[in-house]
Length: 403
Image (tube, rainbow, N blue to C red; front, top):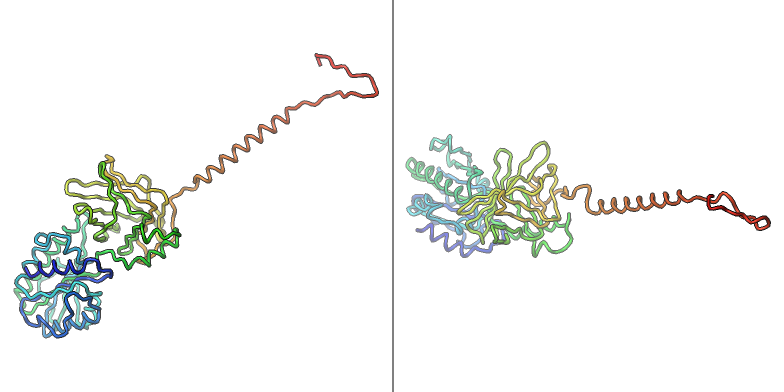
């Protein structure tokens, strides 16, 4: 109950936050160091230095600290999901523990590294539910094992079960366990990324359309930009994809999967799949899932470019299902996975083929003029001149009809 109350109140307070700050949930089975001096206010943004100082005091004399680290996490994950179903283990654990919830912490994992404590990354498959003997050890469980068939709620629910299993096993052995749940990055698309988008516009665009109408998705070295919001069509219904709740990425066998959740389509999620081979990357498909049916959408033409190049197409790019029941349309698409920088497109590999409309027009006009010229030369060469000429001082030349 305490966990639900924290989440509901803080989600309402932090809707509209405009920086990449990450929520942190801390809990311990006892009241020791439950409230430390200088604790940050619940609704304030906490810097790296503030959180490092706060967590150091929170540890106190404890020797056993466990960190559950997601790849992406935000307040929207708590506010947009069924807490009783998705975070059932956390709810049960925190209902009988002392809980501290900080909804907006800047780089919490970076702050942990500044404490000077021994940190050990642990694989859940090899974990024997014991801490190393070193004093004040921190065990880090990196929950970054996303699966291609999982949606965001399924991923968080599976991780919630892992947290419950590990924590309960540790508490049965140790009395002073302090647990922390956070992530590397925020899964919310922050408005502060817009200045980076302007640098992208300098490559191919010149107007101010990006700031007002464009869509820019940026997550973990995967960039997607459209001049207008994409349109999702299902049957006769068409919906503009404008209010994106979260974007997450996962990498499986070298393939990058960009998962997008949409606020206006709470039951719908999209997964964009990219692959690379022989120095080229490809935008292979879009998987759309809803409550009743799943669709695999394929592009009308191959979307591919060399590595370290982006793909750009001024015309509409359409992904359609085999039965033509669903489709996603991108307007003025520019996309690039596997980028070395997290906020800037590389040079563009344009979708326009070598024989573009202007080139075909030039060829047509050239051929037409060549035909006219050949016809004119043929006509001139066919003119026959007279072989006799009239002498005004001599006898008049008479030309018979047979001549």
